[in-house]
Image 1 (tube, rainbow, N blue to C red):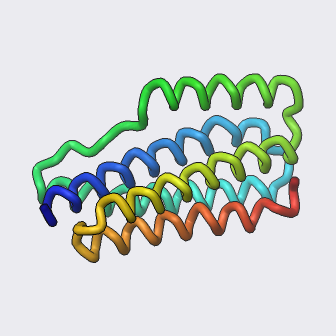
Image 2: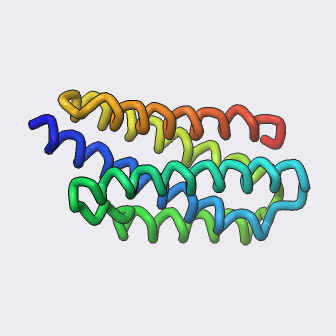
Image 3: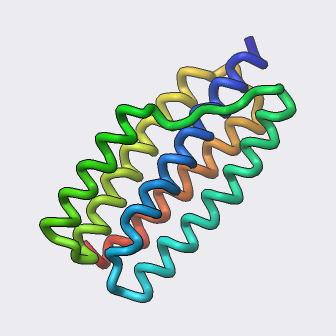
Length: 144
C-alpha cells in the first residue's frame, strides 16, 4: 500500500507540475511587466526543477508519471486564450495564475489526504509543490 500510494501521489505531482508549466508558458507572451515576467519565469524554473526530482523518483519505481488530464488541459488553454484575447493585461494574467494555483493547491492537498500511506519523501515533494503554488499567488497579488 505504501509503494502504491507513493507512486500515485508522485503521479499527481507530476501532472500538477506539467499543468503549471504549461499555464505559465501560455500566459508569458501577454505579460507586460518585467517584474511579473521574472516572477513567472522563476516559478516555472522551480516547477521544472521539482519536476525533474519527481520524475527521478518515478523512474526508481519504473513508472512513466502522469500527464495532465487532456480535457482539463484543453479547457484551461481555451479559457486562458479567451480571457487573454479579451483583456491581455497583467491583471488578467495574475488572475488566471491565481485561479490555477488555487485549484492546484486544493487538488494537491486532497491527494495528500487521499494517499496518506505515501512515503514521507513523496509527501515532502507534494508540500514543496503546494508551497510554490501558494508563493506565486502571494507574489502576483500586486498585479490583480
